[in-house]
Image (cartoon, rainbow, N blue to C red; front, side, top):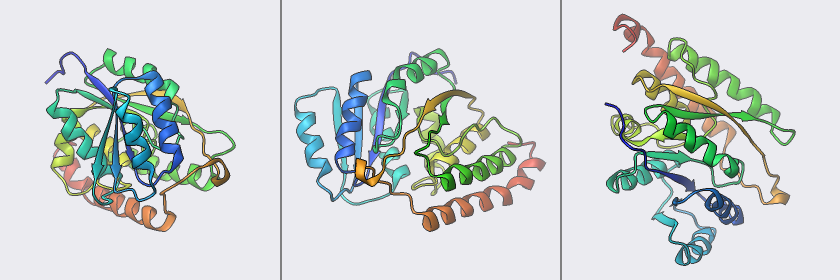
Length: 247
């Protein structure tokens, strides 16, 4: 069903991202209103600073979870609340300052021009990007293309995107996965299966060092095992999908 007049917000999940959270939110607010932050059980004091900021800014809303559930679960919580208020689209971005807030208007405009599509960021890396992570994502992209029978997946691990909310809610409510680091790649694959077309836009990425306040919740062993299990599930279901004609 075609989506009506778009109403979009910026949705930022956050877990223990320290001072970078407030910096990221202030940058996002320069370019869009409203901005929602889902604080996913943080214990580093970042929520308190953000709530004080929100008291003076009607364009900022803070949603809090009592304990850490994972990136996908935090986004799902925000999507449910947004849908209740009539929002149709959500631009997701990380809380650690890696994603370019200045690109928010361009991505939102692309979404408004193609409201039934998902607008996926294509990362432009600089020298700050860890080579292991840049190289490893190529494997996930290659596997996702197989799982979608040659679909235009772009970069499945880059979380700077605009989603149509209702289709994304439907796929998330239909499964128990997509609640942690597996959210970004699984969302692309499942939405492509559902027939949601992709629009790709380049976006610059910056990785901050610990000395610059950079905080990463990515854990190589834990999260790569999570991605591996996801790809095994999808590849195991590939033959049945072929027999059903890719549906």
